Image (cartoon, rainbow, N blue to C red; front, side, top):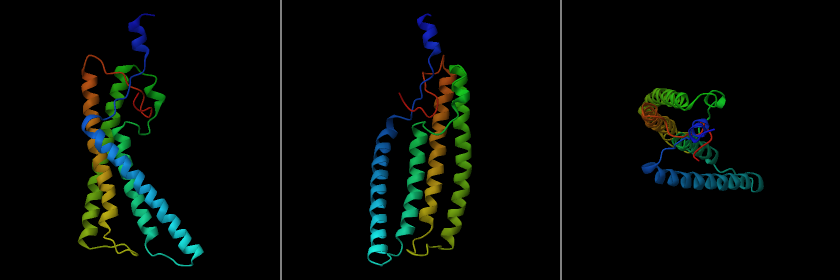
Length: 188
């Protein structure tokens, strides 16, 4: 087996979004970790208050739900930027580097289109609930705040996926795509 044969036999390597998004990614991870710790503390305080002191703190459950929605949407941005979203490796491991690059391109275009459409629909919904001044039951928090998380997450995912699709298209049109792992394996 020649060196060229060995190189062709290696699976392509995924390139996560790098550069300008690496610092915001670290900041987002830190924020997600701190939010999760705060949520755990609130949940423990709520349980102790409710069961040990027989006192119910109004709004903690609502706040925990809203924080969880924001965490999931921010996490979705990070997962997309790292190319570590769920993918079926059954097909990508059975095609060559150019076929895999084409599948990555298709994958990211589908994510971008679906994310953009869903973000637009979410934005229209957020507009409607903002116009009627809908608030949450316990905290009377404007409902555009938790619902905006979905718009932000989906729109951001669509933008990141479009960037990744552009990167994939460049790789596909170049002499040969760079080495990448199958989706879900993350960066080397």
